[in-house]
Image (tube, rainbow, N blue to C red; front, side, top):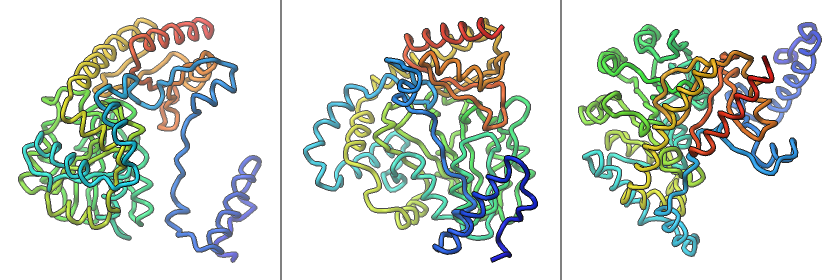
Length: 395
């Protein structure tokens, strides 16, 4: 037992409690058979909910701009389709499951055999990791990006190699190329990146794919791609159709306003899709969410209307925050990443007291940066008024 207990001599002050918790967790894991890989992972901790914020601060309403949700959703087209499916919730969703794959394929110029689904992009990412990774593999992830990449890789026994963003808060594929080894199995890329909203250099994508080891896969998470001019992004389908080891992942949570519907999908070669479907659970998407997604793929007018409005408001918000003394960075997602004149955690706390939820970026190492989701135009105005009041009080 002593071989895995943490030495209490190393515990000083506040670290004592942490060490004791580690010892307790280690003992419990050893006794109950929990995998060591699970012990090495970090649990996802969400921010405070709207109800929690209202209760804590005695508020009657809250604006939630911290989770990159689409405040214009659900769209009427999706809402009606989902309502119609409620009475069929006792039946597996065979029809719309197949139909959504076909619709996605049609938009990309392929058949449904090139597409598979999941309970949101997170579930798709997890199933990809289960399909590809084994003990001893290496993965490369951006250090400041979506944290799920690390955890789903660690749980499969892979070594996680983190590459920091460059000084422009951008993923530089030349830096990633230097991290490639014969053991690299997956390169996880979020494009546009969360939390910075930046995009990779389109021209560097092809050379990076050519530099990857033969059995290495590029997994591109394009959850926010619909908020970006497609001409600025790599033509991922071109590489997939050429037989390159590339997987493209999307979600209906952001642009389509179905975060609660939990529908994500991947596009890859039919051969990979076959193995993915073997690993993932059958009917890994719920009936209600599927109905909404199918309806929106068949009629995207509402999505385009409000998507364009969010893009317009994103640029306007950038301009207004700059006027307030913030340093804003180009964003190609449905949020703005910016540096404040004051500690971000303090600013976020003051905004919470006003009923405005944003995301401080200290967890990524950016102690003076905030990420604010694009809400409705009215919500964006309320946020700007709130942060101006916070800045005035902190002077």
